[in-house]
Length: 443
Image (cartoon, rainbow, N blue to C red; front, side, top):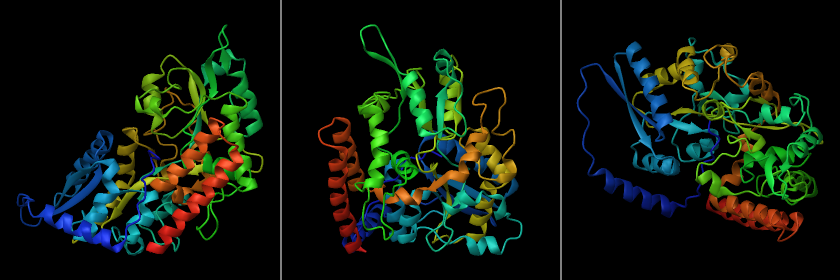
């Protein structure tokens, strides 16, 4: 799982109408596909256009078609930034693929615009599909608030703390304990932050993407705060309980100086300070594992469950997965393909390609993703984190482009100390509530 949030966009009826006109015009120039042999069904499979995603899709298709010679699956890559927009346009135009890539953050949008359909009827009428083998926490990421299931998760997705054991040992520190707290984390971060003879910091104890709700959301909740009102209409980032968690996060940069001031340009340039050994601890997800195995061979590194806050331990949890189009003319074949992706064979294909941890409990200790000869050694941290998981739905409201910009501005003002943390996020709450109200009026 990539945990990259898709920015949800609100559409009024007039916008949908314009999209319909646009797509109908664009479809007029589409050429037909070559004919299939009699008795062969063609499925269209929509995936992200990134190479790792298309490679994974192709591996699944190759294996599936060998077992199902009567089904042909055509892969349709779509650029990530325009993915949700394209599928909503296809839904309006009636040209949706049969099986579509999804992420938990897309479930509300894709159900609202009728992109996908409820999968429970297929599961309940298919005794060969063992839904109980899927981690229930992951299965819930594909559900709406009524319990309807629109996405089958392809992976177990949680955030853990990656740490550089080589730097820990140089600092005389043991590995973080699975029971560690924020106080333990801060103590270690201070000892792992080093300066040169001229007082310049050459190594930091911690770094993170502070603008990601998957980081600050659980950080707030671990200190007893909430980020969103129960009715979903009000941001609570400026409330005292939420500010406690936000302050403990921001203070790492401004007060304790154990983390660098955020610099988005580094990520844009592909610079990873953790991989360079200039950062000792950094939150991450399993798809980072094959990357660090390739780029951190000079270091010994591992992972641990995220530290507990002053009230409890909360970990971001989410998944990517796949749904069945609401417009498919081949539901039986589409279900067979979805079943294959979630079968032990399909899950092993994904795991061996380094794309994620299998979503099946029966593969928790399978060698397809557990390699004892390579780091990290503590792979149990991923599975053990499930008990502390916070579903992505809790932070979904903050992935809206406009809302995200407001939150990011509050963080920037706090990091640069243009104003107090309290004022920055109280001002943000007022602006976010206006966006929420506007969205509500368009429903």
